[in-house]
Length: 373
Image (cartoon, rainbow, N blue to C red; front, side):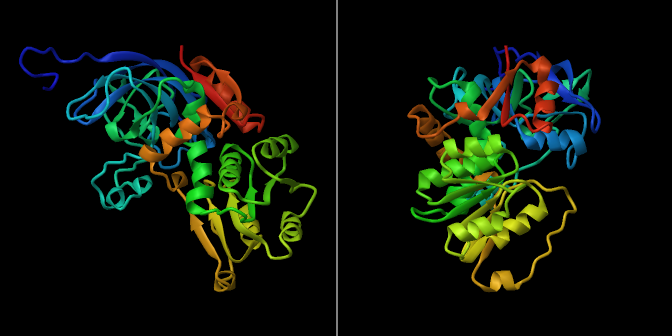
């Protein structure tokens, strides 16, 4: 029965704190918003934690493809508060990680087993569920994780075990899945494959974790920051290359018998770095790009690079199937096969969200996590 059926009062609008982006380049503004109850096929989630991803920073600086005002945050986990009509398998009290792909289950992409490409994916949907003073707010990536309450499609709410900390497994909702999937799904790394990862932020570090879990060897981390390279070694890299003092292409060549790596992953979002990653890929190898470049950026390359049986491929969301991948990654974290604690540089309450953005922009944070009271 729906909430408006006879004998049932309509569910009330709920008030919640949220961090809202009003204009390009401005700090996020803490305010109180109205959250409409979930409609058919939707659930309301009380957000417990949300990671601050570089994509959020990119949107704060550019607002590319996003309609403002908007609630940012897309790496969130929480507890289901309410369930709308026509929702199966989810109940209030369930712990969930929110996926930013709708996973509708009906479009050609979902039916082919590629829900990361779901036709319903929107960067800035105005769902009508979030508003302030009668003004609708966009929900970035359909998640809107920087609020105490959000409403998402039931296909986005991936149920997980309830004995793991949500301020850690929330990272699986974006950075972990993107990096791990770039290595294991898009890169198809096999035991003994040589691997190079350009960029040791959250995505790159999780690509290194994925490569290690898949048995890659050697695993070469490339970055400009020695601390990040040290963390890369902790998470499975066998070698760290500071691109500010060494030629990464030359070092990768030396470590792979002059051939280049079997799989090279670019996790920076810079076309010049992507060109380096491609140059470091052996004939017959695969270069995977997952970094978010600015709209309009162009890559110049010679077709001869492809002639030698090389593959250049993209990977959105780690080519993930969240319903299958998220619970598995949570289990691996619980059994200490997957490392998440090491990725969290600091935690902040919602009212200090702009400090978390500043730390990310300054390069001093791998992942900051916004933890709700």
